[in-house]
Amino acid sequence: MAKQMVSDSPRRRRRPTKQGVVLSEQTIIETALRLLRHHGSAGLSARRLGAALGADPSTLYRYFHGIDDLTLAIADELIGRSFHGWEPTGDWWRDLYALGIRSHAAYLDHPQAAVLSASRVSGRASEQAAVDTILGILREAGFPDGAAVRLYRAFVDQMLAFAALDGAELALPDDVRESDRELWRSSYTQLPAETHPHIAATAGLLVGLADRSAYPDALELFLDGARALLQRLETTRDPAGT
Image 1 (cartoon, rainbow, N blue to C red):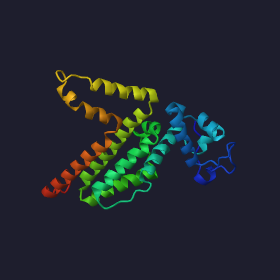
Image 2: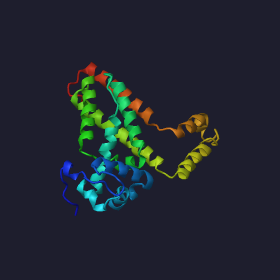
Image 3: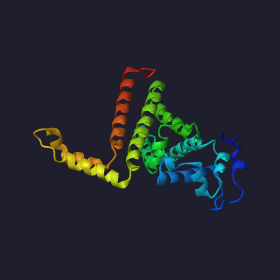
Image 4: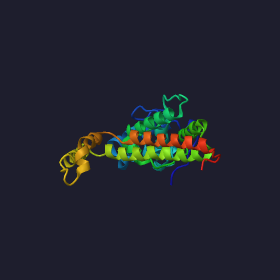
């Protein structure tokens, strides 16, 4: 059974560990991110964390209820990093585009963590601030509350879905990832026009897209659709945004 958590101040270790580390929630989160990068989700355990920190594995439970609680903290950390340095411009389309791109990049900086946490709800401060910020952008743009909530959910889920998809690819061993890309290139540049005319006509473009995420294009299409919706709502003056 997980040990009872205590307040943040008493939980901070007063003396350094064997590795010279003064423990805190943030230190454990950053160490967990490094373990995920090198070992994947299977490598995230109290034993490995203890070894990396130079502390007893049970020390984790002074800061988190367990590995799942740590996973939620990692999810919140990635959300928080998405907003580091971001400043709103007042142009809702540009602000959401910038946030989407920044968030996607923050997750892909830690692809194993992205796969592990993209489907989770942290319920923590960074997540709450992000939800409020995105809703605020949409409401201040003129979207009625019903539309703002639906667009918020679609905006976030689209980013997280691509983060998980692209993160899963980046988390593959290098040789496997390159083998997949080479198979895509070799397979789709050799199909004859007689049997696959549209692939043959666009083969060069298809191959060129293999090395980049489709997320920026999908995000642009989503935001253009949102802009068309706003124009339609303004025309019909639908107060509920339904």
